[in-house]
Image 1 (cartoon, rainbow, N blue to C red):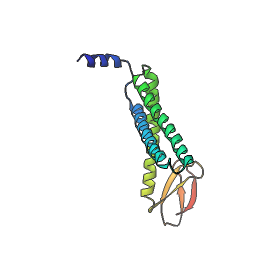
Image 2 (cartoon, rainbow, N blue to C red):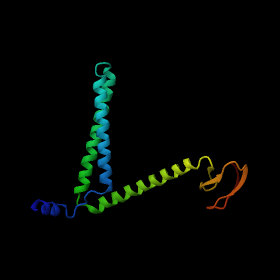
Image 3 (cartoon, rainbow, N blue to C red):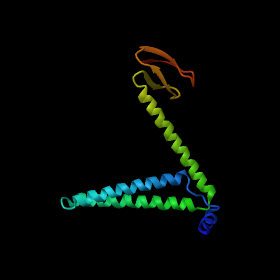
Image 4 (cartoon, rainbow, N blue to C red):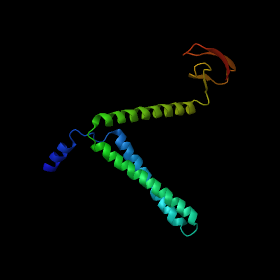
Length: 153
């Protein structure tokens, strides 16, 4: 019980593991696994080609140092007492993650609707729009800027 109390007191006022730190841990693990693959490839090519083996060894070290750097950065973030800066970094990370997720969901929806809808942009304001396919030439009004134009579906 004493160890738990000491750990609790040690972590008071520190950032702890947030979503950005967990992402850095995962990215570091993936980087180390890729480095392991390059080690195996380097060992397999050592007898055949010195140049290829050297390239794989260099790639191993690059991915190894990136992975270890991400692990160290994750630990630094978790133990940091500057909670305000770490929360700001985490907020920026979550914003970018949500941007990526929205874009990905939009691409998935476009792929799902590719047989029934045609996607296009307004020539004036670049607003994304869609119209049913195989309707010939239709007149479209942009809902954002009110621009009227004709498209062929």
